[in-house]
Length: 411
Image (cartoon, rainbow, N blue to C red; front, side, top):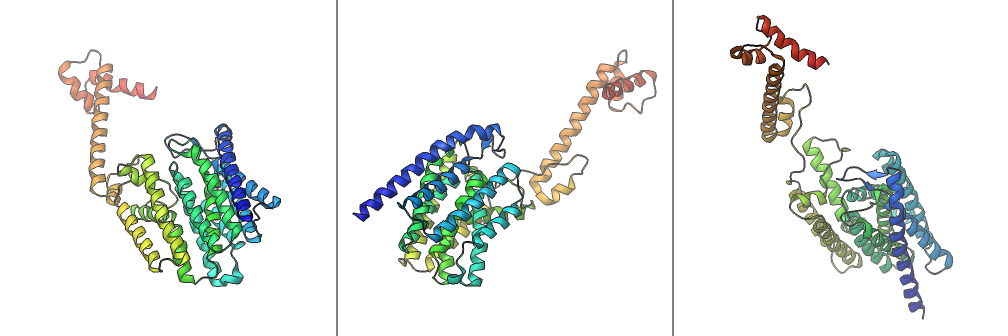
């Protein structure tokens, strides 16, 4: 009877989380457009308040279940949910007021420091866990640059980390991640391509923090090397995306904080996949590495499985680095051709020469057309030469040709 009661309670909780998120995300779309809280880096502005729906529904449903005694969270899961909600509020401030990344990273690190159990991990391992949670949480934000990627990877990872928590008999984190997975599934109804709403920093940071914090709690008490391998396997996709972006921008000489179409989904699109196909590929990759992480956590496979995951992720990053995502360097007004050519290579050199030639031809044609309109009564044999070299002519008729274009430009 208690087993049936637990199954019924979990079913009601998941269904409520799914439906409430789907409805609330649809209702928040209009206010986001009215308040201009949108992502303008895509082809069309996409509202960013979808994460608010995920945060509110996850927090309310989990809190209501705990207060009613249906699905008690426990102290560890309660602190994790409170800290994740604070991180989500910080992300909402970033969506509205465009906070710098350093403030988001610092706030996430402080929240992670309040969650990590130092008594069981020790000070050194606890500090490393705080840094890992902060960095991987920021990596989850990068997945929200494409339709459906963050939600799909989040759902798969939530089930995997929840399974690890359930194996350790940590019912509170397991139920909390189940509620999160249902909320993300309801959000995906509006985030599938073409997306009508996005997670934004609010939802992506909340999701990343909740997943990484629960993973740290589930691996507490294990060895540091094996724990690091399992944690990296559970979050291999967002970590690979962050490493790929940092390496490509560093190699291209671009600022690390400057956005661009250089994430995993963007490069898969460059290879010919559709938007839905890129999501399916990344979701399948996340499922494979999460299954490996769960099997390694339960002891079904050895520690070398994490090495295989790391090797596969490294090979994928190196392969996708060869996909060209940055266009040729543009010439700045008044600058020469050689400066961008040295940085960008032969393709940029040829493109710069072509642009320079087009500019010269365009200016010559403009001078000819203006001279022909202002040269009333000019002899036909000298008009073309006077139009190109108006200053070198000394006759009175050519002085008329010089004055006419000057009057047009000043007016």
